[in-house]
Length: 473
Image 1 (cartoon, rainbow, N blue to C red):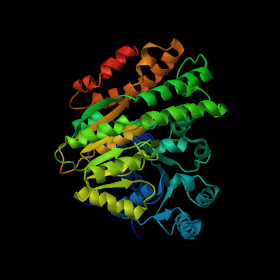
Image 2 (cartoon, rainbow, N blue to C red; image 1 turned 90 degrees about the vertical axis):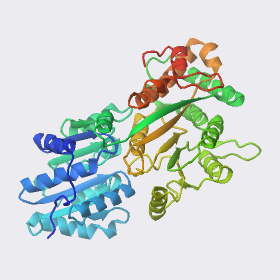
Image 3 (cartoon, rainbow, N blue to C red; image 1 turned 45 degrees about the vertical axis):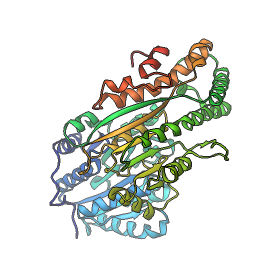
């Protein structure tokens, strides 16, 4: 019967061994807070192998990941460690009988190892929990990949208490604007983080590549500025005198406010001048290759045409206007197609991939040398995950370049609106600048990255800081 052991070619990195030891020292429970691209999957399987050895080479391993493509990646990694896991997603008829059989055999002692890899949704379903009732919790281990997802209300109430060994993985373990969800995850995995390995440490250790950060301050068009100011005034009126952060507002109880915030975020994400700036940058580049473009999921008004998705407009501009070999990378493509696109990108058959969110978590694109971030959410998890994907090492690159498009609020907002509107904008600008500051801090060109300026007169990050009294960022 197959066991669980690292492949002969694998030589654990020093920090991976330290992470395993920290987890074992905490009675086999805890969260590993490790930068994207530093090998959390391998580290967790090394921990599982150590635990199995301590348990006389017996272990039932349950792995829960947020998406199906991540389940497939885990299955591949487990094959390297000598296990053929059950893939538990989609139709329960395709995996339930085998899972029940193997867990029953494990419980009776006729099987020493079993592994099931599933999605978070399936893991927290009543059906899967009923299957887990057959497991010997004292000799079972659960690995929660991208563990922050498990803090969602519909997940956290289904985390199995019977399983003793618990390991959570994430580059961003805290849930944005959800202290209760964060606390729930940390409590389940034995009061939280037992090991941290950050981005700067990973770059210094040569496990992630160095990078340059280039922020671009983008102005709204006159029409966009008018719309932006009108929406901001409506938001200010709806919110009244808000103290604290926008995220503290109970949006669930105010559908109109939620829609206004969403409408303004879409306007910023699809600002027309982002496309002209992207075109200019690419036209000035002699050899465009291994390039990612992250887009908004909103629509833009194309001159003389009906509105189209920013994703489609960018893909058309790169492929048709600039002659680049380009393809969209979205959830509209099936898994086989996405794998082929990644392979073509790696080999240089494709010059560029254009994505919305599909490359945010769990998809490896180490060949990436240049990334253009046209739109980003206010959630730090997104840009931290994206940066980690871009910085994965690859034999063909020495460093990466990240271009970050930041929309500056209209001048009237900065200089001609009441204090209530100014303070509202200040909080939004603060989030953008915090992202830029985070990116710039570990960049090769820090602190020069924060002095970036453009010829249209908006100025630099330093100008925005001054205008909004955010010089402490």
